[in-house]
Structures are given as structure tokens and as C-alpha cells.
Image (cartoon, rainbow, N blue to C red):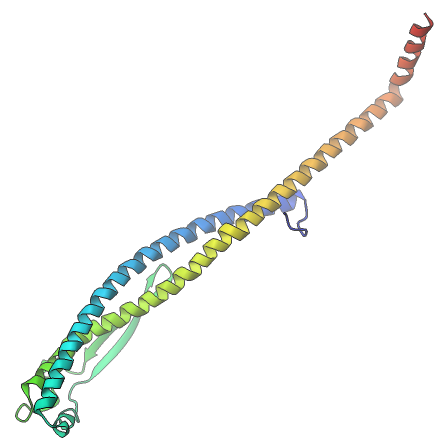
Length: 229
């Protein structure tokens, strides 16, 4: 049923028709956006899964090497080995736009370019397993950063997909049907008013013709004459 606040005028009908055209165009654009976001989201999910498996394997390898190092070194020696780090890592965050969604892009750079600076200890009193553990963590760090970037991007895209889906459903199931019902209601009211106006005009025309030519009186006279004959 049309809203009781709708005013059945031609101006309102024109306004609602324009609004309906805009709503349908927006509905199509939002559906296209939702579909494109879904494609990007599914691609990121596949990438995220592969990265997670790779990172888990790297961390598992590093933990295994740390366990081996801890078994061959004392806890105090391990703590002393990492007491004074030589390398420093800085993280920068930028953004890229995916269908109006700003997703993060993480990049990092080290204080020095020397790979040996990741070892904060001398090799004389430490185990080779500790070296392997540090090397494993250093190798998996870029993938960990990419995984964090991918997971945050997936989270943002999922949120945007949900918002876009709600907007599409609101347009498709609420706004557009209401506009169509109101347009139909106004059209019916205007047609009814036009028919009533035409009937009134026809009656007024008949009255004016009767008043000018007295058709009914002539018909009655002719009827009496025929009956008299």
C-alpha cells in the first residue's frame, strides 16, 4: 500500500520517477561493486591461506631450532646472546584503494643492509642451531608482514562487502518497491481525477447545449405531437 503521506500531484509523480531512476542506477552500481569486491576478497583469501601455511612452516622450523639450541645451551647463555641486538627494523604503512576501500600496504627496512647484523652475538660460544633459528625467523619475517597485510585487507573487504550487501538489499527490497507503489498510487489517483474532470466537463457541456438550444423541450414536443397523431 502506498504511503499515506504521498501527495498525488504531477510534480510529486515527476519527483518520484526521477528518484526511482536514480535508485535503480545506484542499485546496479552497488551490485557491480559488491561482485567486484567478492572477486578481490576470494583472491585475497586464497593468497592468505597460502601465506599462512608458509609462515606456520617457517615458525615451526624456527621453534624446532630454538628448542635444539636450548637443549645444547644454558638458559643464561641464550638470554645473554639476545641481550644487545645489532639490527633494527622500521615499518612503514601506506594504503592502496580497492573499490573505495583503503587497504594497508606494509613495507620494512633495516638499519643496515648487512645480513650478518641480524646475529646479535658472537659465534664462539653459541650453538649452530641458534643460528639456524635466527635465520629461519629472519627469512619468515617478510611473509609474516605480508600475512598481516593480507588478513587486515580481508577484514576490511569483508566489512565493506557486508555494508554494500545491506545497501543493495535495502534498495532492492524496500526503497525501489516503495517508490514503484507510490508512483502507481499517484498515477491511479491522477487518472481517476482526469476521468472525473472529463465527466464533469461533458455534463457541463450538455447543460450548456440544453440551455442554448432546448433539446429536451423539443424532444418532448415531438413526442407529444406523435402521441396526438
